[in-house]
Image: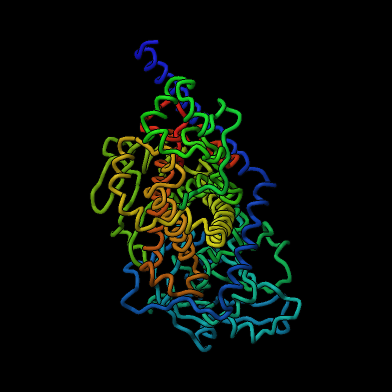
Length: 260
Length: 335
């Protein structure tokens, strides 16, 4: 056999191999895409969330504090993400009067249901923190938040022993009319840096950032930090609320535990 | 035979009969062709070899070497599953905000790297990538591909469509397997002395690095005694990937977790902030892609079948003696 023949065979073999690798890759990618759409596989992958939550809670102290920065570290512009102005007439009416008529209701599994006006919240002991906000998309921004610690409010209403989660009902609906909501367990709800913020960077919280109050949960990702909070409900389980997974984005397949 | 990768050597039984040392030396003319030639040219002389040389140590023959123990093989194939999934789901996650920064925050006007779709005056949409202030048009690959604004193209991400939630599910599930696998392998390598015996480059190895680089560049790979253990470039690559790059990509990944940051603030000081950690994570991912590319190239060019077999069954064929470089034969020194 001449070397020319050998070369041809070599090229043919290379072409065949490249083709085979490409075809296998395409097959695997299509297979993975199909798997991604099945409930059982999503359920399997979803098991990692529980492992992550338990591991992170074991490795980090319940009281571990998120890093607090200085004024010099503030982001020049703090981006507003998600809803920037709720498409909700009741909310718009409240906004027109600078939320003077707004009241935060706290109910559900509590001994003393209560409601707080914005002025009342501002009169409570406050906490100011300069922290990093980490969006699930990957970007970070540093802002200065001032608000009332959630633990203060929970101490006022006295959760019943059956209560396990704190659910935040919000004013911003999506196109299907489903309002945003979120939930925390007590480990994060009672954390000192978990506050209901009414100020960002020394200004009254702007509508784009969740006026009149936005939840701050500094050890989790941004989507846990509900904006436009209207009502807080203590529950034993969130399975009967909306999609049943404990939050608006959770119902779209994001993790309830957003510690990573 | 120090530094040997093997835990046991046995003559290759099912291939052509291997003449024992004594036999081959006594009757070189009875052997055929190239092998006999090698025996003559590479041997100082029959008279120097004692007649009572043990039969189990033939001088010029293919040998089987038990190169990869079961834990090594298991860890290897788990990585084969994990790495493509982690890389591609990682690119899916990256696509949710296809830009990189240095420091703690993302100042949108100061990215290190940014990919975006740009609408031209004529209404066309193009993909653009900016790296350290230099802009490139990357339509079809980065920034804009398959009629959609996206960082990396559909063929490079898992899932292929834009689906951050599912990308995270894949990534964080297989990250656990990758981490547990890595920890178990690291422990095994330490306890079994695999790290010390086979992987860690010794001073003696490092002195010969120039020769190894030359032989790699000319695709000439060692045979015989030299092929029994990894060469210095292999040692550096494997040790570097397992004990430097692996921990680096896991730790930078963990640094992106706000909970871990609260518990271990030292991590962020080490990497220079969360966005720096994300950038290093991304670079480490491409270092893995680079390693795998070179690794596959070496596997394919140094005896694909022999290398594959040794990573499946553990048994690796050593071609003894001979300075010749034979493309057709299974070449030793795998990857």
